[in-house]
Image (cartoon, rainbow, N blue to C red; front, side, top):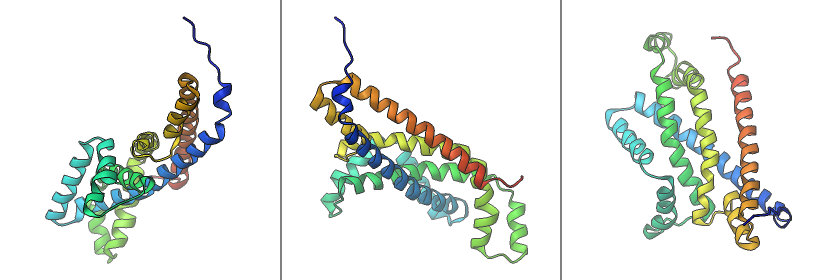
Length: 221
């Protein structure tokens, strides 16, 4: 039995796929921004906060990193409404993705923070710099530079991780693709096209993050 690929019935729905791609990029960008913010606060809290805060943040990191993203999505979308916290599918996806990335970003950034020589921090204190300026300029700036490759790789994984949010009815690229399979019955063709789209987008994102890194860290070591 031979299978003949017919892309025509799928290509007529490219507008729907691109609409899904736009939604995927929105979910990825927003969750990366919020997740990175969580990671920065978590890394600073674990490194410079009181003991109890470090314990709480450590528990958060271990809980998120050792449970599937899909389960976290289900908890935000299906379980939180039981206690009065109800979100739309897209909002729930952003919340779950942000919390998920935040745990990984916390550990990545903490590794960068811990690599900073404590003597530099003491020198900054002796110069009378305010704590937030020490954290921003003496700690976070070189820490981010040190871990930027690992952090940008996590951002790429976050972009691809958005493909699971269709499980809670978020209309991103993979969810649109699944709908097209049911409409056209051309699963090979649909998923080949979606795979190509993801490949192009991921390659473009990788180049953009590399360029951004060179722009941000163009000063000499």
